[in-house]
Image (cartoon, rainbow, N blue to C red):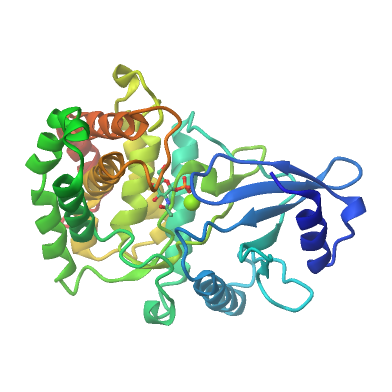
Amino acid sequence: MFDPITLQALLTCFGLDPLDWHCVGFGTGLINTTWVLKDRNGTIKYILQKVNRQVFKQPEDIAHNLRVVGDHLAKRHPDYLFVRPVPALDGEAFVRSEEGEYYRLFPFIGGSRTLDVVHKPEQAFEAARSFARFSHLLADLDPALLRDTLPHFHDLSRRYRAFEEALDNAPAILKAGAVAEIGTLKSHAGYVSDLEALKRSPDFPLRVMHHDTKISNILFDRQDKALCVIDLDTVMPGYFISDVGDMMRTYLSPASEEAQDLDSVHVRPEYFRAIVAGYLSGMEGGLTPLERGQFLFAGRFMIYMQALRFLTDFLEGDVYYGARYPGHNLLRAKNQIRLLESFNAAEGVFRGMLEALLPVGA
Ligand code: GN1
Ligand code: MG
């Protein structure tokens, strides 16, 4: 939590009178720290966030991307709801504390709510359509104008190399506890070269992608209609499979990546259909034929990469995600491996759904 002096100074820098605001912790993200600011009536008006400097080495790059994307959308699609940061009194997107921490403020969208779990396929459809629409409306923005806020974030080859290095350096006792998981992830290493092959094709374009499409990054209204996408720190050039795949990773199972009962982790095919249908709807025909053929690979790629990341972190001593109990990241990796197995076992059902959703010949 904040010490009161820091909070007072921060609010003042954003032009807010500290006496008018009550600050409360908020949200479930693993990376940044988030609070809400309530006014004297207890109404939430702002979101205050501290950027994780271990992860985002250049917060200015985030501000740059939000400016470029925000300006583009404001010019081309003025009705599109895009939540920009509230500038500080000096005009900057961040306030830097004495300790070198970066804080920023967002307006809170009244009447909105976030979901932590997807309960209905319609919510998956809405979210998928929103993330697709976001990329689609930015299809005429050159991705090269954006900076990589997290260089190599979804670069599976690098993630695999990091996993191999962690294996080389990890204490034997950690490796001994993860023999089966290490073997499983090695056995799927073919996904790494599959992705490299896709990336070489001109029909697999770089696009402006969100890169963190979990359900809590959509604001919904009370009727479960999506209002807008939020958490834009990882908006940068990427491939459509990142966004679609992360939706599959996080919406298909009724149990989250934190679930310890692995038998509760399994895919729900009707949510797969909803994600694909929603994505195609938001893209309005904007995917290339090669991309349209990659919905299955999208899910595999993202679930596999997350399993690799959790297992790598376990082997490296929980330096990235942290751990609330010993073996937490190993369990998260087991959870994601279980999800990958369930996903692959449902391939036949998914293929049937894709045939029905994709135009013939696509
Ligand atoms: C991190 O903090 P959060 O939940 O938004 C991570 C994602 C992972 C996710 C797994 C910058 O996101 O890539 O998929 O945890 N973000 C970063 O829970 O590493
Ligand atoms: Mg995030």
